[in-house]
Structure formats: C-alpha cells, structure tokens
Length: 503
Image (cartoon, rainbow, N blue to C red; front, side, top):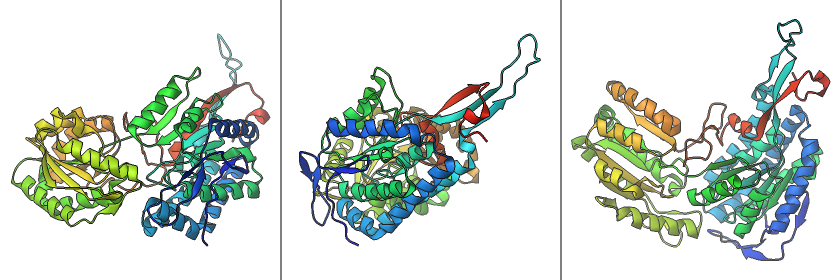
C-alpha cells in the first residue's frame, strides 16, 4: 500500500491546508510539499485540546486502554506504507523502521495494560479518625490526576518511537491528557500517516477530536508559540541541547511556568576496567565500535567515549578498535543538516589539544564515515569541547593514567543518559568506588554491555541529570514516563462517588 502525503495539518479531526509550504528533503524517493505551521494553527489545536480535556480526562482507564490499543492496531494496519515513507524520508533501512514500528505499537499496548492495572495512580488513603485527640482527622484520599494539554516535539532520529505517536504522546494519552504534536520537518510524511492512524482510532473509540492534533513544522515560531501557549501544561522534547535549552528557558519564563521534559544530549561514557580490558580486549573493542557506528551513530545513547588505563592492553584495544572501525561502511544520515553538523563536530573535536586521529571520519552531503580519535586523560579533562556530544559515529578513546584518574574523570562528567562499566570479578573494588559517582551522573548504569537499544518496560529510565535531561526525576521511556503528565490531588471528606479512578 503506497502512501502519498497531502501535506496538511491535522487539527482536531480536520485536515487543514497552510498558506505556505516547504518541500521535504527525503534521502531517496519523491519530495512532497508540506504545509508550514503557524501560531494560528497552534492556537486552534491547543484550544481544541483544552476543550477535549474536560471529557477525555474523565474517561475510564479501561476506555483509554482500548484507545491506545486501537492506535497500535491502526499503525500496524498501515505497516508497509509507514515503512516505505519512513525509509524514503530518513534513509534508515527497512529493518530499522519495522523494528521501530514494533517498539511504537508495543509501548502503546504496554501503557494500555499498565493503566488498567492502576498502580501508576499511587492511590493513598487515610481513614477518618473522628475520636482522635486533641483534633479529629478527616478522611483523606490522594490520587494522581491528568494535568491538561501536552505539547510534544517530534524527534529527528526516531520518526516513529519518539515522534507523532511515540513515547511522549503515548504517555500523555495514557495519563488522560490531550496532545498537540509539532511535527519534525525531517519526516513530515511519516508524521502524517501516523496521525491518520491516531485519527482513525479517535473515530473508532468515540474520543473527542481535540485530543490529538499534528501541526507540521517549517518555521521556529511553531515551536515557540506552542510552548508559550497559556493552555499548554507540559512539554515533551527529544533533540539537541541548544534547541532544547531555548525551549526550556521559554517554559521557565512564562507567567505560569510549566515543566519541560527535555532529553537533550549525552556522551554515554564506557569505563573499561583493567582486568576486563586485559581479558576481553578485542571483544570489548569490537562491541564498542559496533554500538558506536550503529545507525550512523544517531542514537541518544551512542557511547561516545571509552576510558582505558594506559599501557599495552590499551594499545591492543586501540588497534582492535581501529581495525573494526576502518571496516565500517559509510552510512546515510537523517538529514543534510545533521551530516553538516557531524562534519563540523569532527573538525572541532580533532583540533583540541592532544587529540590523535586514528580513523579519519568524514561525511558527504548526507553520508557519514565513522571517526576514531585518541586523547590522554589529562587532555580530555582540559579540553571542554571533548565533553560535548557529536551526533554521529565519532568515538574517543581516553587513555587515563590510572584507575584513580578514571574516578576523577567520572567526577568531572556532566549528566548522562547512561554510563557503562566493563568489569571482571577482579575489578569489583574499582567498580564499587565508581558506583556512587556514576549513580549521580546517569539515569541508567550498565555492566558488560552497550547502551544503544532502550528497552520499553516498567523499569527503564531514559533520562538523567542535566544536560542529559531537564528533569532528573523523570524518564521519557517506560511506564514511569506516564507520571510526567499527572499531578497529585488530595480529596478531603469527599464522597467516594465524586473521587475519580478510586479503587
């Protein structure tokens, strides 16, 4: 089933044409004319979301679960067409898009199951104590309630799982909150066909049309007007540190500030401890390069640096990483702009003091070749440019002087999505010293693995201290992500029939 985008916005059940258009830039296949979003489109979508909230927030958990499952069904019904337009726009291989679609529908179904169970509401009950002296206690109930319309920004690197009906949208809808999506201009057709699936589910389940809208991008004023709209109660964002911080500041500067749940950037360091390095040198080097180069390095959890203690084992590790990376083929990047930023990143990082180029990565108009660099621990600490994420397949081997310097560098790290330990039994003492440091630095800690690949589950944390995210107490992946769009309400002496979701 082929899909040809019509390029319109979906606003409260109506497909709306914009006055201006932009031309999509697919990696291959035909380009399409897409309507440019405006603040007027944003206002119409948000006003409709506010009106829909009063009914949708009162729906039962069972009804919302049916709605989430129906969205998943409608996405699956468009599977082939989604894969075709998704690969055209992003350049990602078919297998990756199929897997990402499965992740997208899987998290919708998981969230449906989770809200029916009801544990996420964290219900608490203090019975009345009328005879308590010196003061009686009233009956108190606490339950989590939806906050209102949520703005969601589509991500460039996950056209399905972090975009139109991705994790932020699924979490907000599960919580009982309407959603206004700002589509990403890198994959507008993919956003449109997924929006069609959501719209079909809305009709099938008799959900208010304003519960979901998609406003295509094209200009920055769409995003700024969305986060500044007085009826928007929270924002979900996955993207660059610069763009995310600008939106975060706008949210904080509103007359009524709102939470901005931004996942921004991370270098995801790997600490390869001495005994693991000696015993599994080549295995770890090949695994690291495979993780680093996967998907042209365009993952939030891409492990950008590997720390090893200087010496002969470090030499062997470096040689194995060079061989593995040199054999890695160039890959298509998501957009021309991302490829250009990758080229600039290579130049910037390579120019830092003490950096040695091991594999010279490069990128054409939209192609990226993996890049491998090496630097001492002292020079890494001194060169702050080396601490910033380069979005793409660029890895840095940091050769530290000792395990003590490894701990010192851990202390220097900014907030991360992940930190990884490669260790054998004999490394446990060093690992134990690192653990309290890394717990403060990252949302997810791994042992003897690689961070690319995020499980959608009850236990997953995809977030971390700034700049990994703007809210260290939240996650954008897993069932806990629903809590971002809820707030606690206490009901005092309230008749049970008036307390929602009680059970």
